[in-house]
Length: 613
Image (tube, rainbow, N blue to C red):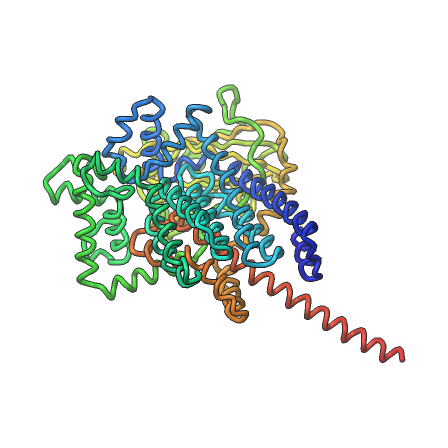
């Protein structure tokens, strides 16, 4: 389809009816591709999605349950969950009333929304460039492992992107054909995004300043004012609620204070004595202000005052070291252009059997001492037998070094398996993997991390459930490694392997492997050169307006969000529009390649003709 659109564009097949038909077919294929990629990501990661930002998701769930119970007053006056706008809990409460408290329902909603975001990427690119460029941009967005992965997390980051893309579509339309309702719609959708995440709070005035020079003189300031005011009207209920409950002007939510402090702590190498985590901040405040209750909540009863104390503390550091922090903001802002390392589509599908092992006997059982005795253990690692039959492993100092690799264990080919292994982590971070005999292929893996704020002896036992399809493998190994920390300590329980029977989903590998192959290219080393080439191409062709429009949202996040601690999911909106620039570069490369091949063919034809004559 992509080649068809590109060929039609190059050959000048531009009849309105044909173009409309092609656009419809391309849109249907793009949405189908986006849904497929996100479905595969959901299959691969749905059991681990709830482990990402557990405390944050728990806060959203608490707020949602208040609404489901009908306790609207408690929801409106809750001071412990002031770190997020109310839009996501309101949306989840409506979902839970229909489908019950289901993670799957949330993920399906977000998958559908992110697939619709692919459609708006296509529309934005189609307004600015050719149909071929729009098709390429949509395909990049549909295949992105980053977009697919973030859409299944139980967080509002992915949902908040869709209104921003709709807003940008109306902005692009408004600049081509200025109408008040375009600007009002754009501002309203920016406000809708703010109901989900507060990061876009200043986006409307920022965009208004940039689009004023692009508008005709007659109504430019009226259009810009309509854009900003429509955003303000949409978020006004949140501001009014905060003013009534908190007796303060809080536009959307609290949280700027600790994010500012954490943003400083990430680069200060400890010289300002600022903790890097929420838990560290509240514990330090409990000591500083002689308030033990401050160590229980990030905000609580004095939440507004505490957030402002944090802001003042951060601003004092910045005022004392302005040039240093300007450099920090620059480095952090540039880093936003890097693509996050997320799980790509697995080559093998998930198992087709359920995880209920109550009626299934293990086909293999190994005590920890037996496992370690037969395993390859790192020379610097130390394994100590404990009195209760467990083994305590102290790793070496390597960040990602292998600690234990078990001996080979026989499995039946093309069967579903679950490996159950209790593991209690006391320090560091570890990853457990099931590999083939040569350790060159990972069949399943699971990360194990400490629960923050709990002492080593009180850490919970993680019962790992590693599911995998044996495929053509007859032997497997179990591997335990460090996962980014300098050292790790863990207690190992007895290992059990369950054979669930023949696999029924291996046919999915034929769909998964091509997607996985392409997704391996979604890394910064591949996208950054294309981004530079795309920008250079638009500058060479003097397409300044398109470049400005596509750069507005990325510039906003790079300027404003760079002042705070930022995770990749906060700024994922950048890459939806960056992919349009990448599409320009890919299309240009295709055009040049076609011209080069045509020229070479012409030369060869002339040479053959001369030889014949």
